[in-house]
Length: 326
Image (cartoon, rainbow, N blue to C red; front, top):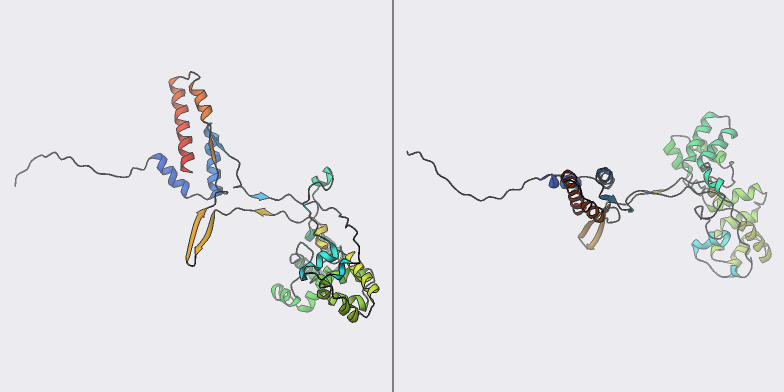
């Protein structure tokens, strides 16, 4: 076997992981919030980079300031003869919903002061209404079940199952909660909420109770049926309805609600067919970089030395590459 030397020319292709490519791969693995943090670090080191204002960061609604709202006086007669949609009953009785976030309400000092939340105020009142520690703790737990409108809509049986308490004990805790102010807190539905307020005014007579039991008929403006069920004439029925209109269907709105935090999704999924879906990055959630090319041109014309020019060109190239990578 003969041994010898030979020179061959061979052409091959291979992928070289340059620093820029490595950084691009690392950026793909980051979530939106992690990506924003990385870009902020880059903008601190690179004078040619700036993060444009986008909707990527969480939006926190301003804490509402509770203000008493005066309900406009409306004519009680005439428009009640027309039937309404079933869900229009609340607006018939009490007008549109009060917007606690409405601009222009309250003084500057009122906006600076932090109002107590509904649940904090309920716990404060419950602590003064009973000396039974067990009942107090159970009533404190019920405060977490109260929604922002002041309703405790879950039935006692479900609450007893979740809290591992007897149903009689839950009923006693609900009754304690319903003694709190504003009156109407802890009602299961609109009828019970209004009944609590009427009972405080000593106006929950049998006719009014039958009216509350038939609120769907009031939503349909079925006056003959209501007069027959309540045992009153038309004038008395209109007076009863006027009393309902003076009540508050959402007593929980008298307190500050917890601020809402809205997060934008990283991806958006579209259905394009019976069994086809398209997944896209949410453009509103992606950060956007601004590269200041005019600043680079100005520095280039300013007579920099070799070392400074190399630094400026390197930073500008990194900025333009990072903007393309996004």
